[in-house]
Length: 95
Length: 383
Image (tube, rainbow over all chains, first blue to last red; front, side):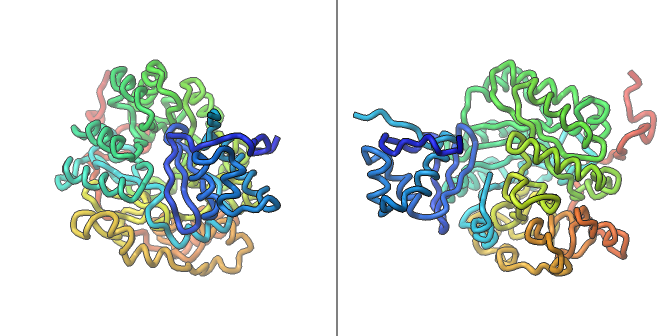
């Protein structure tokens, strides 16, 4: 299964509490203090999505709020899936 | 770390803060490794005080430098070492420190196991005492493996075993991997640079062309299961683009740099020389100011000439290789790496060249020999 294939955009997600975000002109750097892994976000849109995950009921709403249209969401879902697979994101229990 | 070519060109223009910062806390060391890149041994009397170190950490926190790679010398011999580690982690700056293991007692190991924000790298340059001790000194293999045992027993997960690949240990990569597995650790291998005392032994110790090929194949096969500090990008011309995991570019002054024990900032940990000195954290307005305003760093962040490598079809892969390796073997910076995998390094090394001396030598006054009998019999215990 390719990394990210299992990402469920109808679920609610959040950044792992041990992940620090450093915005950069190209997007952002993410660092996970637990796994000690570094990741790159390659544009500001994915950064906005990642930072707003926690305030949306599900990942798809966060994508739409950041201006990602339904027919353009595939690369973003892939990116979120990669982040989830490396534990940068974690599933949140819905209220 | 993975990155596309778009990110690489972005990184080559530099970031607002380093991704990877090495901080040598002291030049003092209990060992005298023949290839020490910082020529360590004796403490520099002007080394930063505890308060000055804390001020640097405050800046790193403001700059959102996620972690520092602390080394030396042997950093744990600083009396305030643990105080500084605690201060850093309390200020959102994670610590990875490199040690020969001398202070990693069971008590220290237990303390380290209790923190999520401290990572430990034990240096080992042979998978057997014989190979290791010839480079790092008698007893150093036992010291390192005792530290690894203590860490494993304390439940410290995923320590790193840090190996500089040499002609003598290049055939031991599988043994190193097994050794790491035995201690629940991860293997990290990096490139031997002719920096510091390394300049004196590089001719004898750097891997042969054949070994480099084997090393490349081994790295491709083991992918991201082995850490490399992304230091083998000079090998990337041996295969398909992207086959070698990691950020395949020279990060000097762009995404990495070094702070030395007296607060001097150099473009990279392997370039302790006036030519790569960007400034000083005490006399030039702090680390942030040096990172952002140094003329040297501005130059490194501007487009670089491919020079003599411009006509080579592999330039996009290796980008001319390692600046420090070229400089300290006396080769021009806009030409091939001394270990160029296309074979352009060998004729360059055979030509006329002047090898620069290191900026400072902190070695203790003991003659260092790579292996073989001690220089004088009385230098070694007869027991």
